[in-house]
Length: 166
Image (tube, rainbow, N blue to C red; front, side, top):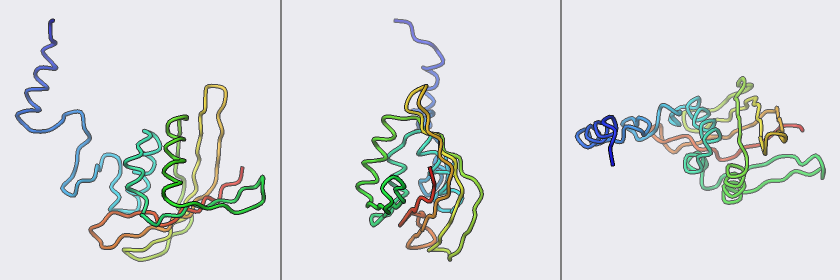
């Protein structure tokens, strides 16, 4: 079996340097800044978008606090619905497995808080592609309540209220 010299060179370089050349760069604190740094609020939303785009449940889970609550209004039933982190992770994992998602964050409509507790309202656009002929488009706004214990910790969502209408 003939091996391509490029891959042998990359493997040798990786062993010498002690890194995976195909992995995203990691900064001193362990976050992947290439895909958003959840130490900042803008980086949190960038990481959230990346998790949706690449269907990354591990990253997505790291963005949710243990006591996370998701809520939305079900217009068909005329009721408000909410669920916790475990149900959110199950629902999102199923969504990631069965669809392609294109999430675009729009303007920050409102933001208030302090360096460890913040509420951010953002516009968003989401395309959910089930198959080539079945694409759902949602525009709306989302209200995120973000917290972190200290300035050196990552922001995590304590709650996400989806205020989209579809």
